[in-house]
Length: 539
Image (cartoon, rainbow, N blue to C red; front, side, top):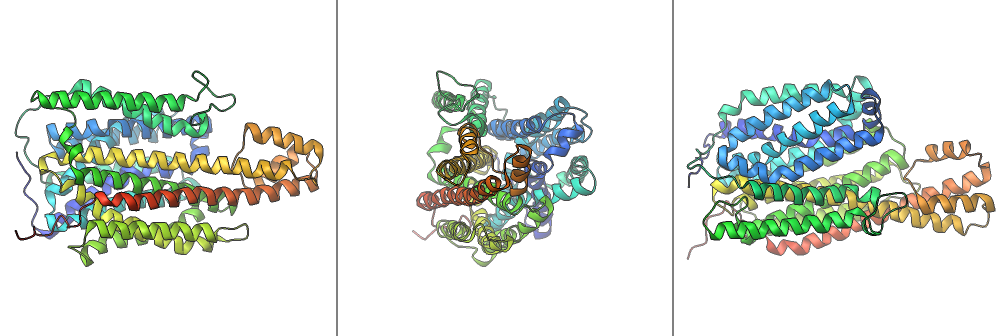
């Protein structure tokens, strides 16, 4: 099979790496940058907050469900070509979004075009790093790429808050078009292997992959609204259960059918969408498993901490973003420096250290967050979490790609990014479900037994909390209680109970994240001890 000759010039490889890192940053930025601008976007495109949240959900859905197919297309037409085509599609989507007058146009530009572009770009990035950086420097290179994506998640609220406050959210997408244009100027500097032979595209396999992944991702994304198993009141149900459980089951069954089809194609010497041998490779499986755990925990943290800062402490989007900057800086430093300081370090050991740092940061948050805590309580946890994520990021990309021939790197990239998207979706949904469930239980338990609360208000709040509960700030709650005509004494009791329940809910959500991080430590047994860049042991 054809391979790509690694770029030997450090300067040339550095330019390529920065170009690819910029692409990764853009792909990850959209969701986080828009979350703080939802209300303004809704007003500008004449829709509701729910409409904009639907667009965000569809962007994640399109990107995640097409990732494996995008990786295969990159293998067939060339990774550099797939990267360039993806960038053009993505830029078209960004330009459309920037001028979108309505929700359908926003969904077409942002959710569909940008999602398709990202599905071509992200697997290609994984493969192009392998083709342009020598093996001994790939850990640091993949660390830089992963850091660019994670930093986009962390600084997205800061960028979105600033641009929306001082100008318009539309300028974010204008800037994306400009950045894509700059990246395209450097595409020819990126080395790529020639496509040695014409491969047949497994269309049926691609359709099964898209359907299976779409059902699973959409189910996870809608779990907070519909419930996981039992349908929530006034929400859709199928045979008495939430649609989510059915979507997960049917999605898993479709992926099972896909697996059987791929095995049959491989046995008959035809080209499968996913080579089944990739999923029997212990190192590949170990790498994508750890990517899932990393992004699951990472997404949970990025969901809970902004809630503490923006809702409990009522900080602005801009101020919330500033508090996440230490995480971004620590992440970037560790992702770049760990491979340089420990070039032959054991991936298994370093990933364990990274997860331990993440776990330590999460535990410090659990013990530090209280009704009287201020924003300073997140400073040390942000540093620990950033160091942990960066250390993991510096290893996992090189682990997965080094396990296969370079010609399969785009396919591995598709699997890797699918795992990352699934992890991020599950992390956000799980943290949200635990948070709301805990908040509801704690608040209902506190108010239903409080004898100082007037009987009328106690009954009304019990009914309200049984059907619906929201994670709201003190000022928002006070305003709602005044509008409802609740007395000052009852309002004070409810506000105090809500404040205590919020902290309990955040602790429970962070506790689940800590358990996930601990399980991730167990899963590190799948990782290799030897660095991909290390010489093979003498026989």
